[in-house]
Amino acid sequence: MKNCVLATILCFAAASSGCMGYSSKSEVTGPSATGVAALMGSWASTGASLIPSPSTCTDFKWNPTEQTPTSAKGSFSASCAGDLKVSGTATGTLANGVISWAANANAAAPGVTSCAILLAGTAELGVDSIRIPYSGTTCLGPVSGVEILNRK
Image 1 (cartoon, helix red, strand yellow):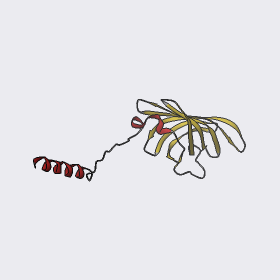
Image 2 (image 1 turned 180 degrees about the vertical axis):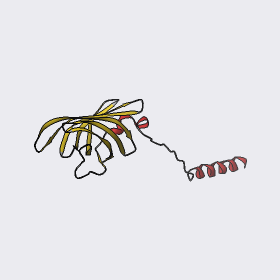
Image 3 (image 1 turned 90 degrees about the vertical axis):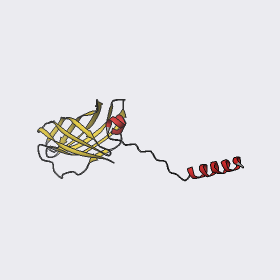
Image 4 (image 1 turned 60 degrees about the vertical axis):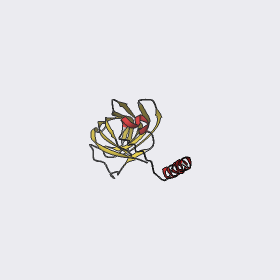
């Protein structure tokens, strides 16, 4: 009889454990949690101005397609200093939890010969966004500002 009661209790215990829920929670906070892989994908500015001011760049688009353990590199485009259409490459490098960002590109505009554009800054990676404070030079003068790129 004792064995029958014990077996019944064990059956109820096993059956009821299937009704209980188990959950696990993990949180991704940024580059330290996800590494340089978090930079991969297509990124674009959240909102572009129709005509950027002479001292800013807007309408950033970055599509990293190359990845190493510490960096991501890919095509980059933007509009800078009035009417310069910029295209080239940009690289994000992760070191000690900080993303250094740089773009090397060429720009063209009506009445302006092609010129080199260099932009750089320290990016802040969010879950689906990158905040990029930048500064640099164009053939029309220095530029600086902050762009927010969203994953597309």
